[in-house]
Image (cartoon, rainbow, N blue to C red; front, side, top):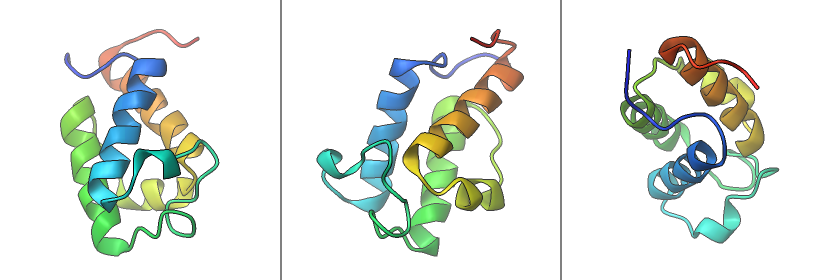
Length: 93
């Protein structure tokens, strides 16, 4: 499978934009340690929208449960990076 940004800073920047768009919040709130539910106040509908947006942007499959379990932005980024590497055959760091 091809497409989607490669793992790394560009991926995190794009992911940060997706969180911002899905939650309708300022980018300054989307820090690495920000909790999607507590800090950013994403509800179940926003989380589902984020899941769809992530899958579309990165051309991956991500389960809703996996997204919710990660919760913090940095952990979500790690899950997305791992899935991008797995799905697109990109070597790990």
